[in-house]
Structures are given as C-alpha cells and as structure tokens.
Image (tube, rainbow, N blue to C red; front, top):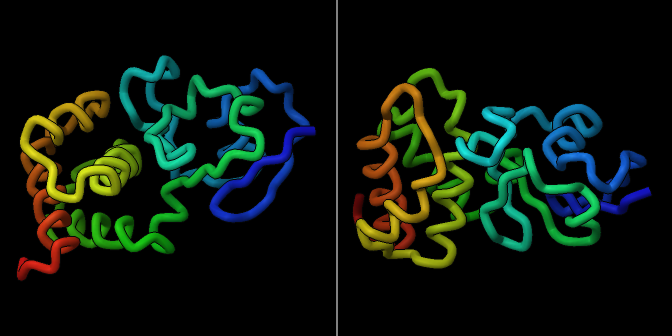
Length: 156
C-alpha cells in the first residue's frame, strides 16, 4: 500500500510501485484533469507538480512520490498562482481544443512560482516540453506574461 499526498489529502493506492502516477490519478482517484498524451513524457499533457516541480505523471512511478506533495490541475483553484494563471488563460482565450491546456497551465504555474518575472528565454525553456497541436503558443506566452504582471500587482 502506497501512501500519497495528493492535493493536500492523504490517499492510498494498492497498485504496484512501478505503476505510472497518471493511472493512479485518473483511474483510481477519478482526477481526469491530468491527461494522457504520449505516454513517453514528451508532450506534457500529463504534467503535475511533485514537490513544486513540473513532473510528467505518465512515466513517474507512483512509488517514487510516496509521501511527497503532488498537486494536479484540480488543485489550481486553491493555489494563488494557479488561480491567476487560469484566469489569464480564460481572459486571453488561450484554449482551442483544450486537451493540452492542463499540462500547459501546470508548467506555467511551476515557472511563475520559481521565476515570477520570467524572461522570454525562461518561458521558452519552461514550456518547451509542452506540445499544443492547435498551435496556441502565442496565446500561451501572452497568458504567462499577463499572469506575471498580475502577480507583480501591475494593472493588466
């Protein structure tokens, strides 16, 4: 039995330790906001935070996160930075099909928590592992910049 701390709640899983965290989140815990994309940690659709770090849940063994704080997209409304990023996404109408957007938001939140005023290069680096088949990259970048200004208290 693996003890997990998911979105500030202690949960448990009887799945083998090598089971990908993604399947525990989606299939056992019903947290379907985290998406399956490629299954190889290449697209970023499955991004969650483990100890505040953007992490690909599709290849992360559940046993490796035992007892460590894991946050999913479902937790972002309870997180100040998460709320600001989500509102920027809505205000700039970032999503097109929307499938990748939970992962995009999770990567953006992790970036803004470590670099509240990121440079263009920092944004590029943090978001480089997140793919968007619809090509909403300019709107994603604009939303991150808007969220950064809002975090700084600037009128946006």
